Amino acid sequence: MNITVSSSKDSLAEEFAYVLKEMSDTGEKIHVALSGGSTPKVIFDYIADELGDDILWDNINFYWGDERCVPPTDSESNYKMTVDHLLSKVDMPEENIFRVLGENDPEEEAIRYSKILENELPIVNGIPQFDLVMLGMGDDGHTVSIFPYNIELWDAKETCVVAVHPDSGQKRVTITGKVVNNAKAVAFIS
Image (tube, rainbow, N blue to C red; front, side):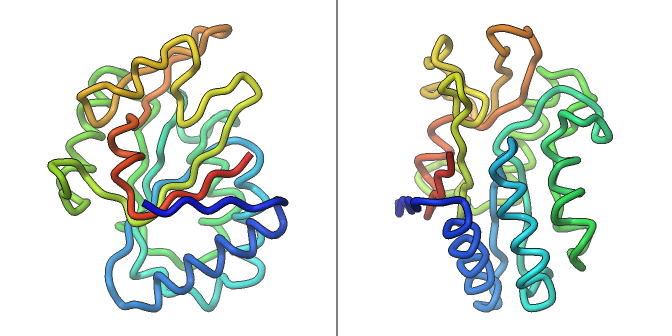
């Protein structure tokens, strides 16, 4: 696994955008897990503004590493943030977008999304493998939606699980550590 670390949001946005372009240029189908939060907005805006017409969107499949259990139009939805800052500005085929259905029952959705990943991604070491996973870290120390208080979810045997925000009690569907650790590359943003 390759881990990419950058010193600023702007340099990370540029680097991430060019990595995505290079990956799309291979002509192979690329599987990318996106992050939510505020930092990806800068990256998504940069991609849309600087390389939106140059990336071969037909070659990229987007997934989410985690999603809050809210409808896709909710301001807290990671999917909605991605639509607002990237997907509404580029010509990506709808069939290449695999969102977590946050409006569904969380437990059922974790199972459904696990099956999506297991059917769409290559299986390497018995685990779905992303080409690239974008990770961030919340102020409370969580990544994907695995919080310090429930760190045991990182080592869960499942591909996706339901996590609960320690303060709000909001449920979230998240990929687990085995999926993150199996990725070909990880971009960690904070």
